[in-house]
Length: 405
Ligand code: PLP
Image 1: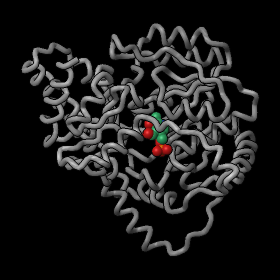
Image 2: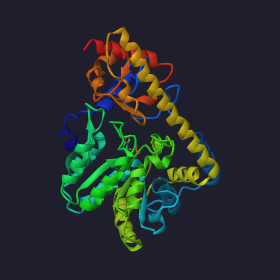
Image 3: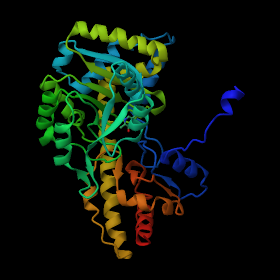
Image 4: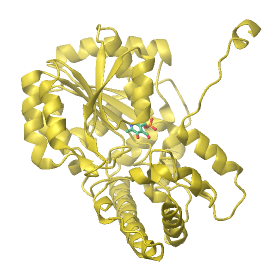
């Protein structure tokens, strides 16, 4: 082992890890960590879903054994998770065209699809700019060239649709694109519905392969279906695509690693062939997914009472985050007067999900640490970590730091 360990090189941890490490060391009672992407409750702790707690109680009563699952999970898990993405009356589900496997979180779904695609001499995969940082790490580690589509425009604090659509049109036919549809991490702006038809037209014409990454369903819109409307549009237009789904945020199951990979096939026969191929990949890496996680997700989604409780909880959580976002930017408007600043904070109110992306905060992220406020260098902050108790302190200190720029 010495032989190997002596060759280790210094490793530069990313901004989230460094910020969280500094936060942990900070002894101040005022400290607040807005760098990490977790859903917090109004007291600043991790949000817990009542429905998930109840589901866990039920499954502990019902199940004593913990056998291996099939490598893909279970049929029940596949059907229940498909319904959330593809809809209750999904044509693809009726036609039994969706190959679903339970994965180790949303990251595991991305991992399996990338490992699968690696076997097909695919050189490059596109991400939208500014990308989710782990997409880039993962693509590079699989040896793909990472290419960028124009997406977020820091001047507009929005998507630059002209550039984005032009890129989609002008890249090579059969390109592979990793795309987020709701609560985009980090930019927090999602593609507007009025562009869905045009995007579907281009994808059909150019035969692009789109891999949707859905990590925040239910946290953007109160109606879960609305958060994946672009995916439903693709289904309506008979496009084949892939979805990486995560339950880390919308069930607060981070450590349980709940996720699914869905791949739309031509028909049932092709689906079977794909299943066999994916099973071989899973076998090589971890053999089978986690049974406790399977049971929790299934119990929440199949038990009518728990499902409506979950939807209610999710609605309340997303409303709270939305209200806190408004409150936070209103407080910035208020406190900036004290420092003679004149920023337009209203442009950020349309952002969605647990984050807000405020590029200018990238200039003060180190200064904010002096006040025990931890954010990352891109200016992305976790809005769910802002509460009625800490909002004044955070907003005032941000304005103070901005005034010193
Ligand atoms: N995709 C995006 C865009 C994310 O933001 C995250 C988590 O932060 C993931 C995927 C990974 O989700 P999981 O924790 O389920 O692996």
